[in-house]
Image (spheres, rainbow, N blue to C red):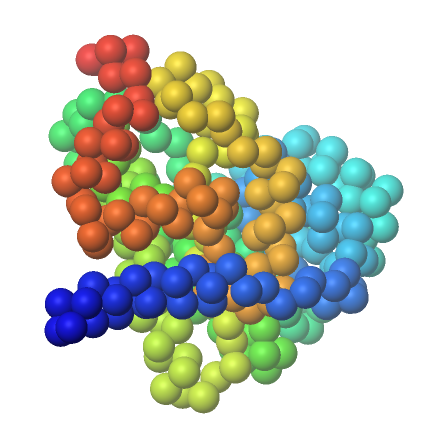
Amino acid sequence: MGLLLKSLFPRMGLVLAIFFYSAKQEFKVEMLKGKRVIVTGASSGIGEQMAYHLARTGSHILITARTEDKLQKVSTQCRELGAASIHYVSGSMENMAFAQEVVKEAEKLWGGLDMLILNHIGSTYFGYFKGDTEHLRKLLEINVLSYVTMTVSALPMLKESRGSIVAVSSLAGKVGTPFTVPYSTTKFALDGFFSSLRQMLVVENANVSITLCVLGYINTDTAMKTVSHVIRNKPAPKEECALEIIKSGALRQRELHYPYISVTIPLLLRDWAPDFLDSLTRNNMDIEKVKRT
């Protein structure tokens, strides 16, 4: 009987965990109508698609990325889709002064902020770790320190509006994977920062939600160019991914797993069968196609 109970409780815990992760409050477009939203990394990929989804809800949007002409095109499309207002600021997140400038621009435009969506990433490689600590330092500045800088700058406005922070991360920030050492390092750091900050906001009775988006393989142009020849799985669509991110922020979810099954199962295996997960991860890659440079 004791053995039966010992095996039953973990199974019950798994069923409950799946139930609570799966149970979703209904998303309504009205949740975002008139909301003031910053989206970083919005000139292409998932960020671009998020801008379009927000435009359809009638949000006020401030987008940012490095390339001005791409931001202009996205802005034009957002206007046509019905954005309440659309603005852009171009610059590099290597510069922490620029990260602060984006938040100040939102304050100047709207006098406040309802949602901060952090989506930008620095350029890195998919391959054997080169031991390049300078590259890792630069990537930490773009992928982590600029997220921290923007969050700190935006918090006063978000506390006032009882707003939301949405940080786009990756399964590689929860589970160690080969060929992604610099990238994975930065995404693990995001998990630590935002998980700890979430706790601090609760202690301070600050009604600001933090959603960490744990993404799997998505068909962005960058991902397709970098890893499509190695990863055996089929990528998920960036348009649907962007919409799920928007929904998760509006619903103030703790975490988004997308695609749900391909992200959630590895997270369960990580704690129960880590060696099996490592093997499974490697077997999902055509390692012979990864160049040694």
